[in-house]
Each structure stands twice: as structure tokens, then as C-alpha cells.
Image 1 (cartoon, rainbow, N blue to C red):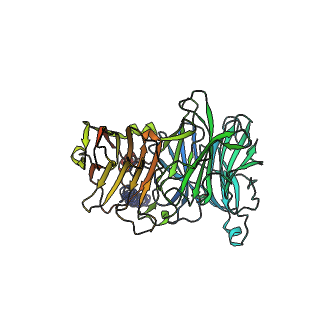
Image 2: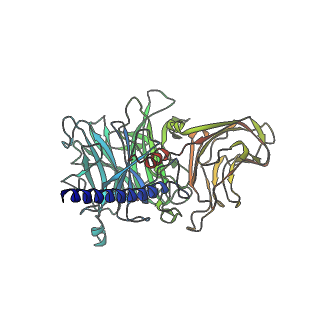
Image 3: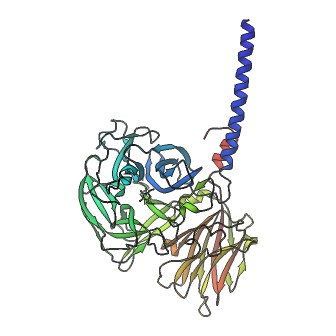
Length: 538
Ligand code: FRU
């Protein structure tokens, strides 16, 4: 009897094991497929499935870069916001973690920031365990539906286990709403001059600053920007950063990033910036001009990492690679949106202004698998480079320098990617207007929005003899860093067939290609996919 029972038990458990293996296999297949769908970015962060918008709470802590993001896990369109979560040890390969913050009775969890409270100013940490603190906007759908204006407040949550689990602060909200419908996206940083925390907050058509000594009680300091900069839409997602000036040792400046939707230079969402001084209470701009972080249509709500170690010292930003004009209808499945490749921001002193320079972070070098360097050549008309790039076009990086001959120089030149359907994406520079452009007029699917198709232009640059382009191409996006990062342009696209031909083009004259280096880049999801294939849990 005993023996029969044992036999039955072991038969039953073998069946269970078999069943769970089948389920796991099914699951494994499902996850692997998630990284090979059409338009799935191969070197950019995207969630495995469902809706994502702004990057949130970018913070470095104990060897990990945290990327939280606006996430709606139930649908492919925007809805009740959560904070999705991923970590990376190199800013390039990401590991997905469970959702960090869920909506609660105070509302959805809108955008915000994260920091590490090393000195335990909040008292929420333990002597040997500094708390990781997330400060975000609560958006109450209940108050909104009730017709109140006060539906956005600021809240706080903390984690004592490297961001794996979070507790909402019992005294939320930490900043009540003063009667403003748009009152959100807190970015909190430590101000060493006043020994206080400073919160930059988007408040309709300006940025407000608050200060605190304990992260719990906040005092209003000042507001900035009602009569400065671009005001085509509501201001969102500010970031106040102190930056060293690159080419002027020992000098530093304050920079204020302000996203705005709509009203970007090429339509829809975009991020402007101000340079100036912050005395711990007020931000004062030193420039009247409107300046944009990126002139493409698809880099929004970008903010920078907190907690980057001093011996690194970089200012690293990530933006949302989409635009509110069409984000909810782009033809990707089963997820929507990706982040930009992380960028290093630098500040450069010009003749009478300080300008932001953006470039891909050096960690991109880890992804370079093969390198092709072309001999210098003169282009007049089109030069097919497809054969030179036997490894295909996605993802690749192109680094090129062009110079103009004494006479007969080209009106416009650059690169064009095409496919056999005659679709193309063009990235170029016009010598007549001194502007870069990305043309996605004929880049494939575009009927999902009247605002998608078009040509984007950068601002006008000062004429130069050498034009440099650093370009990152993924399956459905292009990022241009022109003139060593003085211009950045980011655009997404959706060809009906992968782009597989590359040409250098030149219109009306000739141009010399002094240097063209092309790198094949490795898929950042390969290690996750390989682990999944071999059954090692992620
Ligand atoms: C910017 C934004 C933020 C807001 C969040 C909501 O894209 O509108 O202002 O907090 O998205 O998802």
C-alpha cells in the first residue's frame, strides 16, 4: 500500500514537472519573441510589452543605473501610470525588474526623480543603509473628474533594498497643490551651497523651485520662465543641473532643462534649455534665445542621472524617443516606445553664450562588433556604400567628416538609407542654409498620424569648413550628433521592409568625405535572450 502510494506520488510529481516545463517552454518562447518583433529596438531600451513614456527616477546607486519609466501595464496606450523599472551596470544592457510604484488612493504615479539620501536627512534610512527615495507627481483621476484644479500633488516613496521594493511615505502628499492644473514632474537634487534639497517643478507655463532640509517639508522659493523661452505648450519635466564648463576650466554654470508639449521646433513635444545661475533660491538665465536639446521630433522628457560618482562626473541623460503628437498610434506591437541612447551632456563656452553639447555615452564602444573604414573619397551625386557594409544596416553607427572643396562645393550632402520598396530615410547637411536635416517623408508607414511624415531641420549653425556627423541607426530610429554634438536630432521611422541599402549623397556640386567609419553594433538584448534560451533566469 505504502509502495503504491509512493509510486502514485512520484508519478504525479513527474507529471507536474513535465507540465511546468511545458509552461516554461511556452513562456520562454514568448519572451524570446518579444525581442525580435518588427521595429523592436536592438540597442535602445524598450519595455517587453505595453505602454511606456517618460524616463523617471534616473539614479546610480551601488553599481547600478536605475531607469524607472512611465508605464501602463494593461494597455498599449497611455492610462493609469505606474513606474516601470529596469537596471543596468553599464547603461547599455538592461535587466527588467518588477513594477516599482503602483497607483494608490492619491492617484496615478506621474513623472519624477530619485535620489539616494546618504546623510539620512529624511530619517527614512537606517545607519548602514541609506534610503533610495523616489519623488513623483500624484495625479488624482478622482479629483480631476470632480472638476477640481488641485488633482496634481507631489508624493514620496522609499526603498531600503536597492530599489527592489518600495514603501510610500505615510505623510503624502509632501507638496500640496496650490490651485494649478499643471503642477508636476519634481526633479530633486542636493544644493551644496545652501545645504538643502531643491525641487524643480513644472507649474503650467513656468518652473517653480522649492527647498527642504528633510525631503518631507517643502518651502516655496521662486518661479522662473513665464516670460522667457518657448511657450507653445505646457512646461513639463524640468531638470536643474550644475555643469562644469568644458573648455573653461574651473568655471561652472547652472542649466535648466524644460520639456514642453506642444510647440517644439519641428512640431509637438521637445525639450528646451536655459543656462545661467542658481543661487539656491532663484534661477537667472543668461540668455534670451530659445535653445533646444534636440531638433528631431522624438526626444522628449529627457532628464539626467542623479548620484553619478564624482570620479565619473558625467552628466548623462536619457529621453523618451517619441512625441505626444503620435506616440499612442505608432505601429509597434506588443509595446510602445523606446528611450534614446543614453547621452553625455557637456557645456561649451562660445563667444557670448554657453551651449549644450550632446553625444552618445562612451559605453557605446562596448557594442561595436565590426569596423569598416572607407578610404577618403569625393562625392558628386550618389555613391552606393551598401557593399562596403556587409553586415547590414541595423543597428550601426556611422562616424563621418565631410569637407568642402574650394570651388564647386555641394549644396547638400549626407547619407540615405533605402529599401527595395523605394522607402528612405535621409540625414544630411545643407550648405546653403547651414542646417542639418532628417527627412522621413517617405520612410514607410506614416498613415497613423498626419503629424508624423515630414522633414525636420536643425537651427542654423555658423558656417564651417568641416562638417561632422555621428549617426546611430537602429531598426526604427536614427540619432544624429552633428558638429561634434553641437546639434542633436532624433527621429523614429517604420519602413515596410528593413532598410538594406546605404548611400552617400551629394546635390549640386561635390563634397569630400575625409572619413567614414561604420560600426556594426551588437544587439543589447542578446545576453538576456541567450540566458533565456539556456534556461538561466534573467
Ligand atoms: C510628459 C508627461 C509628464 C507627466 C507624464 C504623464 O510626457 O506629460 O508631464 O508627468 O507625462 O505620463
